[in-house]
Length: 134
Ligand SMILES: [Zn+2]
Ligand SMILES: [Zn+2]
Image (cartoon, rainbow, N blue to C red; front, side, top):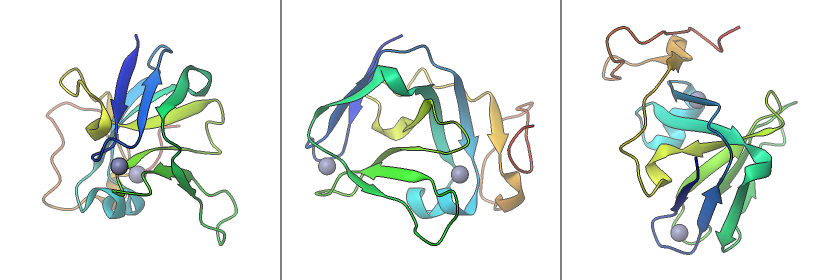
């Protein structure tokens, strides 16, 4: 299913035409920096179906990590669009908050609950994993 989205200021727009691979909420420490404190809600899509249709994102990856996540965000307004991770080289991770239609999101799992804070909500019955599911 094709989805579209972009950043807060409109400088970046993207589309993803591949089949969604996974939907989840991530409670890890890194995500808390990006979201402002809550878990990140994300969908995973095929990287070859994802492209920026307007603007060029700024990219960042920590140089002090062996296999850092590469993060894509708007250089003007700072909105984090998504990331690519070495553990899933063929996938692109989209942050649900940047989708034009955010209503269809249904998490299939909560991950990195080891970093969960008391104010993080996990829906009843959602499979939860202390780290990444095996
Ligand atoms: Zn922007
Ligand atoms: Zn995370």
